[in-house]
Amino acid sequence: MKAHENVLPIEATGRVVAIHDRRIGSILAEQGKLGVTDIERIMELQQLEGLRFGEAALRLGLISEADLRWAIAKQYDLPHLLPGNESISRELVVAHEPFHPRAEELRALRTQLLIRWSNAEVRQRVLAIVSPGSGEGRSYVAANLAVVFSQLGERTLLIDADLRAPRQHRLFNIPDRIGLSAVLSGRADRGAVVPVPEFGTLSVLPAGAPPPNPQELLSRHALTVLLNELGTEFDVILLDTPPAKLYADAQNVAFRAGSVMLLARKNHTRVADTTSVVRELGDTGVRIVGSVFNAF
Ligand SMILES: Nc1ncnc2c1ncn2[C@@H]1O[C@H](COP(=O)(O)OP(=O)(O)OP(=O)(O)O)[C@@H](O)[C@H]1O
Ligand SMILES: [Mg+2]
Image 1 (tube, rainbow, N blue to C red):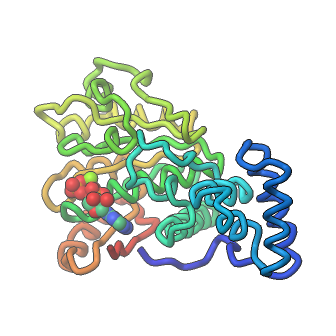
Image 2: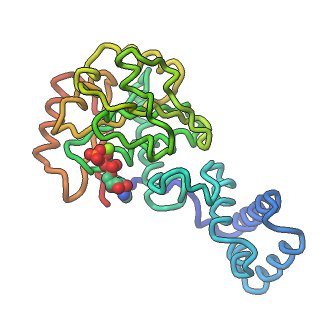
């Protein structure tokens, strides 16, 4: 992914550091990770060696790296998983490692989308994540983007509209017995949407049981009705899709969503394939609101 901006002021200097350090200390103390005497020892070492609070605490072995990352994330108001929560996939890098360069890139992508949406005065923020081939990172980007939107407090819904090789239920460790396939075929209602409390305002609609007719299901008007209905409950709706070059499913989902974020993987996606997907999307009047060059 291409990073366009550095969002987090991690390398603060001077007086800011002092304020920053004090807060880290009190966050860790509130959490019961540090006692009063620990803090005194840390501050002593800090002064002696000119270290930051976190560095000194680490050096003394009073906290772990994970404790420090957690405290920094809390300080900058970036809700993320508490260290040790392994029930959610490590692929959700924005949750597990909020300061990883990829997490910063995903937040930059979120910023760009928000700017485009506000410039275009978009009423419904519904976006299909589309790319030509398999293994290009659609599910990864969709999942991580959903998490960063929810970290802003946006009511976010991630729909797994890849009814062929669904993966979102595994990334978020939720059941997928009932999902989009059942909703579109009229066997379930919006109760199939699963809130993911670890992320506050995030919900996931898994793909559900694999249907024999994914393309036909996704071309039904029921998908438009569902998106309109859910659009009143959620600020942002993202849809994961199957490879656009292989199946017409992605075109159907994009058409119902109205907007697309187009993804290409470095040294993998062929330019000709991207061009033909863009042409087909254009034919159905779908807007391409963003593009990602996924380099990994
Ligand atoms: N930016 C990235 N950084 C690191 N790993 C990535 C990145 N993007 C994708 N991956 C990894 O590449 C693999 C394929 O990604 P993913 O499953 O998201 O692709 P996909 O386009 O959804 O594939 P499929 O066609 O199977 O649906 C996964 O293991 C994922 O974790
Ligand atoms: Mg996928």
